[in-house]
Length: 347
Image (cartoon, rainbow, N blue to C red; front, top):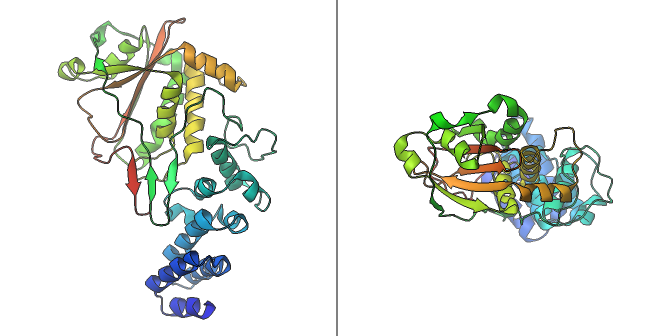
């Protein structure tokens, strides 16, 4: 089979290499698949355009191979052309211990470890270097079931939040709302960070606002036009439901962008929730204490007729004790891709 790899490379035959990737994967010939990845990558330096085969080989190793092979591709450069980040791909089909005993301790391994946590593993006793995220290495009892990617040999499925209908909301005229954006900069930055990656690969709109008053007042500021204002629908969310939606947004970079992973989504969601719930940036937040704070504020989902499908994150939250509220409007006007989509090509 090594000769078959060499023959395909010598003829610059990408189709032949991809057939070999499928053959080696189906036959569980992991050493041959690893060799194909290495040789196709090396051929690129000699002018052969065979990097797609190398990237697909790395993806199949990450997804299907035993831990000793999957660990070798955690930080593979070809992961940029896979259906999702390879640490997340590995975590989708491997448990932490299987990879930890043979992987190098580097940022990619840290990403993998946090992906295992999102999937329910408790790693609080593990020594994980390269602090990549500010969240703990275990799930709080109150945290939601995060929306996880499902990876297959030829595609990936990314679940989106369940649809909500809601009720028509009564909103104030924007002139009657007291904005306090300048006083709440940290909270607004944290909220924007949830969806800011959407703007790197699309024409996404991301607006955030802080006001004195209830969540409906914050929504009023973000709604444009009296006709749209009259058709705004809202629905109450639990803290866990709000976190699930924020984390979904944070795990993506839009329909055409590079997926960030569920661990990144959890990190930005919990960080934003902590700041809007009253914690300071420098606070070391206990995850269960955060759960209590998240449940003490009031969360609202909202939607208007200007965005009826596709990529949309519209959430407002009010602190009834301090009398302040925040809202985010993140959507991609031109996107007609459903929030839960199937990807059958590189992202």
